[in-house]
Length: 189
Image (cartoon, rainbow, N blue to C red):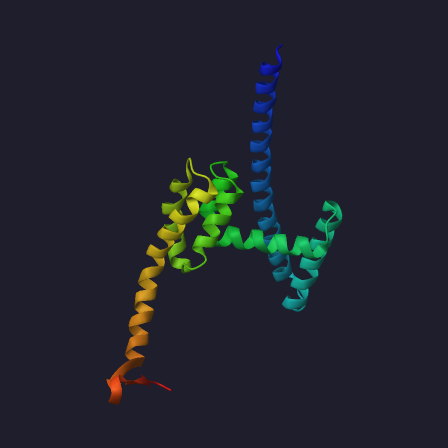
């Protein structure tokens, strides 16, 4: 076997290994979210104070995971919270990552773009943004996802601007020597 063919075989193995690692990361993120959800459910089933039960369940879970993963409890706590938030706010994106259609960079790009969108619009945004990830790097997807996000936030922004305009007004009045006086009106308070 020549060095060139060994190089190609090694590169294929490395590519396959990278894909397997990405798949495991996606599955780990989903399992973290499920774990956090189960801690919430266990706490809800406790008879004592719900807040205290939740704190106890959450603390126990993070302690066990931290010991098993050789990590600090704080980092485990943050990872669980992030996973739970991603799965609840971006379910289509998380499913695409778990299926291996996108990678973590795409997830983070879509997550950043979706941060300005209301909950009601996120599903439509995800459905439009995910196909754009196909064949693109996360960096290439970033401006596209932001542009799509602006489309979904614009209706809400236009409504907010219209409501704000009803309550506030600013105008200028000409004054002496080329000066102007700026006036403002703010209603309701």
